[in-house]
Length: 435
Image (cartoon, rainbow, N blue to C red):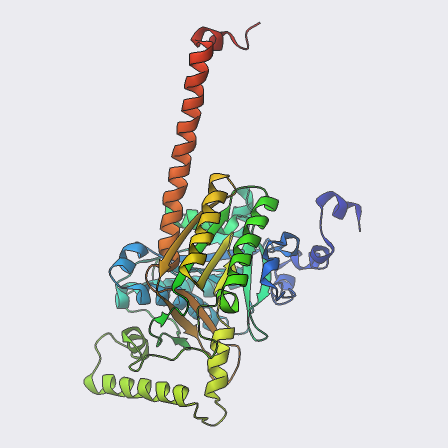
């Protein structure tokens, strides 16, 4: 270990990748070279998270007024737009392994600086498509990692292997949350593309209907740390233990054998399958027949060439991103109402203690949006959210709870000051600090 490493506190794992921060040519494979971990309880082992290279940037997008759209029953459209961001960028950069996270009503990616133009173009066209086709406003921004660090935050990343076929990025450092705040302020904005622009959405699949709970509640959880790491790590361990020991399959919201698509595929899928918003009757019939065939093949387990439907369905469940760390714990879990009560009580206690800010939301089903570049490969990925509010509703409650806690703290400070005034009197306070 060099003297510089001792002074900076670099771990052995971090030193092994120090060479990736020397320039664009050597940072392109930074994320691909990270060794994944497969024990989710290790997400709060923050020494395994490495800082993004300084020449990278964050691409971030979210649906404006998503909570309102979800309340009117448009959760499928909102989730589709969030997943579409990731699919558009993946298809624009098919050879690049890069970190990303699905947020329900949006998505975030981290990309080497050399690919700025490709990502900007994909984001702009996805925003145009969301507006023109689904009547949803998607705001998008590109934030340099250097700007995040200049603001006093960082973006550190690790890879969690959800299965032997798929890994998802975990983020810490506060930089992603800061970038989201800048997005909502209109900073680093990327303008939408011209009318009727559409990126390559090949592989985006939205044919699943609501996936009902098996244990009573689909619980969306967000818990963002505000206290030192040890207290927050203990909170995460408690929440995971409640789910692990009281729920089947660690609270996984999908059936173990995998879900089945809706018989008719769904309206959103039909919009993806055609080139305009005005479907010809024969096209609509063809889409419906194709959806019925897909449902029948997956349900009956009929092997077609190299496609093995039962294996594919199991992989859907295994490859799902139902738990993640995106500057805080975010989960969509299937549990009993009693376990949901216990989780919420623990989060409330932690919030009152100043360990975290948290929000949860209950619903009776989950929703799945997928990226399937090939149905005979095993690396297809699946993004899950609650089907009646999900992460967006949990985030709204988190924001409301944070406001209430801040108001409570202000009221408590005023009460303490008032009691001090009653005890000491104004003259004693004014005289303090004077010689």
